[in-house]
Amino acid sequence: MSIKKRLFNLLKRTAKKLLLPGSEYGWFGDYANWALAQAQTTGYDDGVILNKVKDALLKVKNGEAVYERDSVIFDEIQYSWGALAGLLYSASNTNKGLTVLDFGGSLGSGYFQNRKALANVKDLSWNIVEQPHFVKAGIENFQNNELRFYEGIETYSIAHPHTDVLLLSSVIQYIPNPFPLLKELIVINADSIIIDITTFTHQGRDIITVQKVPPVIYDASYPCWFFDKDKFVDFFIQNGYTKMGDWNFPYEINFGYHAGLLFTKNK
Image (cartoon, rainbow, N blue to C red):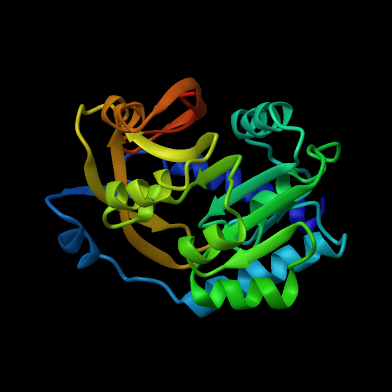
């Protein structure tokens, strides 16, 4: 069995352990505010995470690996089928190319994940807004005619007055004040919004927890939101979008579940 296959199996076992009572990894606590949750975290080393993601994605870029997620490489692409369906739906509604804003998109994980499936899309423009050190590494190692990196929403918007798809994949739950940020992103006026791999709760209210990451991925802990789904969906409806579809991932986690949503702009 290859090293990558053994690691993949280890990650699957680790994911199952997150669901078991008494696991030391997963999501813990129910905090009154973000600051209280943050005080209970160990934080993480940005430089270590950046280098692990960069090294893994370079293997994908150079054809030495098939797929990367959270700095871990896999033998096959793990598609988020709901998100891919949303991208293909958006591509079918335009004959001017597909412009994607992948907010918090790391060094291009989503681009490399979906590029093969989007091979027939005319004039793909995949754009990532990220932290400055990720943007620097992205420009130096991964930027090409389709994939570009920006340090802020305003800089991106100047370069791209029109956005077909706003993609938020496993990012909005890690923002201290998510709804003010979503207000900023709504102003971009994207035709479609894809929310993917986002944490929701059954408890009927938003809650703040601390997520402890298994060290097989990287050593880190940080605050994490679990959103009340009805309230979350209503935010987009109140801001001019219609929910077209949603999807759940086939496992439960502490406090709730991961899910995705596709919104389309009202005409």
